[in-house]
Every structure is written in C-alpha cells, then in structure tokens.
Figure (cartoon, rainbow, N blue to C red):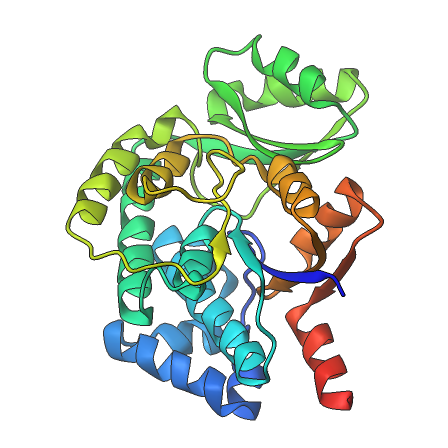
Length: 299
C-alpha cells in the first residue's frame, strides 16, 4: 500500500461559485466556511457569489481559496482519508501548514488574510504581469529572462512549464522572445509579480506577522516551497521567504515520490496540480478532492 499526499493549489484556480456545492452537501465543509465568515465576514459569499474580477483581487483570492481548500480537506478527513504528507503551491502552503497541525483554523486563516493584503499592497506599487511559459526548458526560460533586468523565473512547475513574473513594460519583448524560441506564454489570472524581488517588502512584513504567531507541533510531514524538502524548525523563515522566492514545485513532487508518496489528491477548486504532477511522473496516481471523495463514498 502506498502513501497519500494532499496538495493544495495556489492562485489562478479560483472561479465564481467555488465550494458552494461542497458546503451545501457536507456539514464539515459548511462548518469551515461558517468559521471563516466569523473571522472575515462575507468570505463564503465571495466564494459562492463573487465575480471573477472580485476573486482576482489577491486580498480576496487568498482567503477564499484557503476557505475552499480547508473545507474540502475537512470533508476528506471526516471520511477517514488521512494524508502521510502535505504540500501547497504558494498560498496553498498556508493551507497545507494548517492541515499539518502547525496552525489552527483561525490562525491559518488570519495569516492567509494578512498575506493577501501584504502581497496586494506590493502588487499595487508596480505595473507587473505573470505568465506560464510552456514548451521550453527551465534553462531556455532562464536565458530569455536574463535579457530583461526585471523579468524573473518564479515557479518551476513541471517539465516544459515555468512561470515568470516581471514588469509589464518588458512583457512585449519577453513574449516575442518566447515565441521566437518555440515556446508559448499564457497570462495568469493574478494581479502581481509574485515570488519575485517585487515581493521582498511583503515577505519582510509577513515575517513580522509570523513572529507574533504561535506555532504548534506538526502532525503530518509538510514540504516547503522554498527548499522543496520537509519543514525543519525554521518554519517562519520558510513561510515568509517563499513569498519573494521561486516555488520549487517539480522538486517538491520528486522528493515526495522519493519518500514513498504514490497518490496525490489535489485540494482546491481545479486540477492544475494534478496536470503538473502527471507531467513530472506519469507513474503516480492523481485525483481531485471531488474525484477521490466519490470513490470513498462508492465503497
């Protein structure tokens, strides 16, 4: 019997109406949304009824995705599905940390709300973009980025896919160079140059927030975006540092597989991580929370 991991998605997978059906069907999910509404009134309404534009604002995206992910995870846990390890993509790492036991729900939600505020504040200072570059190697993307002083490779997602962040003024030339090299760049539904030097001040301020936060003992192995390895005792530094540093997603998944994980359940409103993981290693099993839940309930 292999090992199960929960992997929590990041910004970009949000959509109007996410989580509504889950909350209507499962008491465990409704309880999470109700708790988040108690901490931040209107969170469930934004998830269930908010517009696409409203959900693209990072101050809304992060708490709404966190609530949706914790709701889905709570349903699986309530059904007896317990992961051996967890990891999260960008903001998903806060959700993963919460499920690992490092934070209670209120603390995790408070942190992700603050994280979203800080990152949006920095995003508002600059005219920036993010795009996923496909059909090129990491080395090819890095070489193109090196031609532009403020365009950075920031998310190493899977073979043939790297996300970049940069100044919008340099975007046209960058996109042309990607096309000339045989690649394609897909703009992302986010408002900010995340995981780049543009987020240094947000990382510093989030570190201050974490310094005032009580950390609990983790019950489940948690992998870091920053190091691609299981968390050590420097948890605050890992969580704050990832805001302005690349997400090492491909390395995380390869390390988890090496550590015995063979089933990955994506916790979130989409299946972006499932698709990435299939590109990294087609020999492991992937499923969305809804797909896995349907299997559990059919047994």
